Amino acid sequence: MRFKKILVGVDFSQPSREAMRAAAALAKEFGAELTVVHFWQIPLIGAELPVQAAYLDEMRAAAEQELAAWTAEASSLADRKVTSVFEIGVPWNEMVKLLQRDRYDLAVVGTHGRTGLKHVLLGSVAERVVRHAPCAVLVAR
Image 1: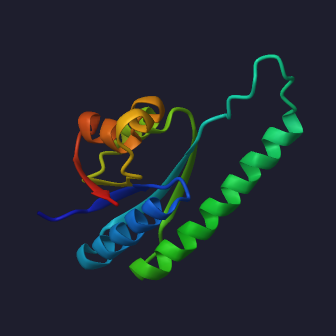
Image 2: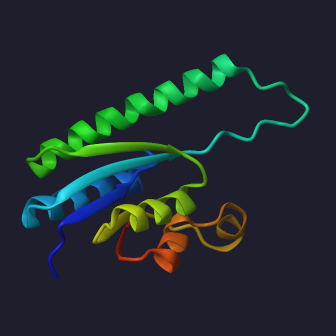
């Protein structure tokens, strides 16, 4: 199997760092395009509390800065130019849409390996991407 376009989703956790490293290695090996993507979901703050726009802007700017740093690291590891995408929305759903729209050959995601009640309550982005992606998916732990 040969990959030409690889998309790696990152949430800035250790499992997503492993996914990014795996994606960069594959991009280097296959000479593939690599895109690092972060999906920012507006945090749920108690409905009774007013949401301060400035606070959300700061959080978003911090996430965009972190994405830029991860993209630079991926570029160094892959030994090629790497692009990044910053999207707002439900991570698994937006990732599947992006995979379909831009016709990626491979999605790479990390997993926290949650089981039991934590898995039920928090869900699994990786699991949902595997179930719905239109392409191959590599899950890194």
